Length: 295
Image 1 (spheres, rainbow, N blue to C red):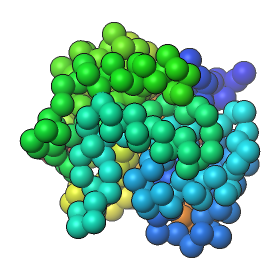
Image 2: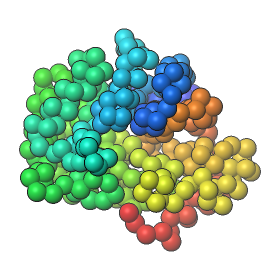
Image 3: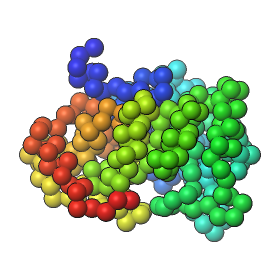
């Protein structure tokens, strides 16, 4: 394996995966035929880490994955997220109780028509952005982990991941065998640098969500930032590729799951595994978060 090929792959627990996977959330709003094409093309391009959730749609995205890819290739690692459910009047509400986590895992298994999920990410609901638990949905982390460990022991899930957690929660959960953490993080929003360092020190994959920012939570757009745009133009790549490439170069613990409904953007995203920013761009991007508040 060449140095460049080695750079393209990372660890998701004991699994070797391409460092650019695919986040399926955007397929909620895609034309079904187009979504199937995107999913199949992602696998053709070597994507082997697919991130989904039964509450995407709700159910629509998992149905599309099943339509497009079942029976699943042995190399495909499907990760899902639990800890929230859709609601008639709100986009999502917390579903943090251990029994609810188990029910969500079972629902994902049924919808995807599989008996095993490579990773299940526990989406905590303690801190913004997004859903916040109140009342009887305020559940201690240890009881949640005990339920996920039981599901792992039953062979229904492979690895346990965490989403939207603090450094203290990560450290509390590490003895359970955490394989990845999904928190908000990108070149412009780096309030969780301490968690990334902790993950890297313990062999835990860091899988940032909103890797290019998001209008959904009024986060700054990486692809609109003039420094990113300028260096991308100089290097002959897109601003999105520049922002994603900075992440891959920033830490070997980072795995990406950018989402798209567009075949051309999909190809651009996967191509990032072959892009390494030069020192000039890296230094400039490293400095971008210095004046931004932590999130």
